Image 1 (tube, rainbow, N blue to C red):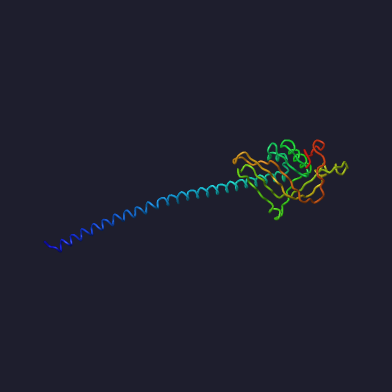
Image 2: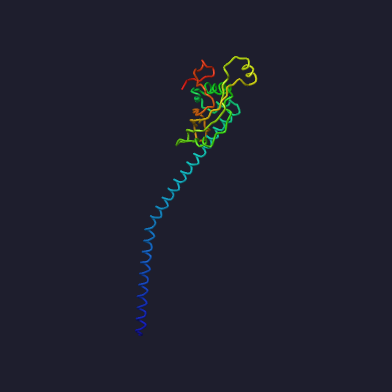
Length: 240
């Protein structure tokens, strides 16, 4: 028998067994590493999904606010256009049924009563509402604040318009002027309109709950309302 061959065979068998043991240990070690990292990966994916959900929610909120602001801006420009074009009978349609408007120290309440009286009588008789362009400084005063549920809002818009009231006189000249659409004391006033707005759902249009004229300057002295309706047929329901 060749001893060298036997020793070589034994060594070969020993090496084979050692390599087999190392392979087995390597598999166990590798498996251990993989198993230990699985919870970390799962946790990372869960956190990523959560972060994505938060970002989507924030983005949806921003879009909802932008859409609401755009709608409110459009509502006010519609209001301005109706005034500028003298379509006074259409303005009350922008208000809720119990809406109100505050102007020149008087409160006009109710869409079908006080609000219509202000625009259809007071504003119409003085040809009030012709729009005058506002300055860049006035534009900076514009703001819109939306509630968290997107169903109410407070908006401020600068305004500059021509206002007027019929001349209180029975003179021949005034009567003749009235026949030709005149006989009106006119002035220019500037300030901001503060609007409280509401809607029933995010799909509904915005409606005016309250419109408050904060007049900051007038071109001539203007006397606030002194009488209420019906003592003044075109007067407010209450004085401020």
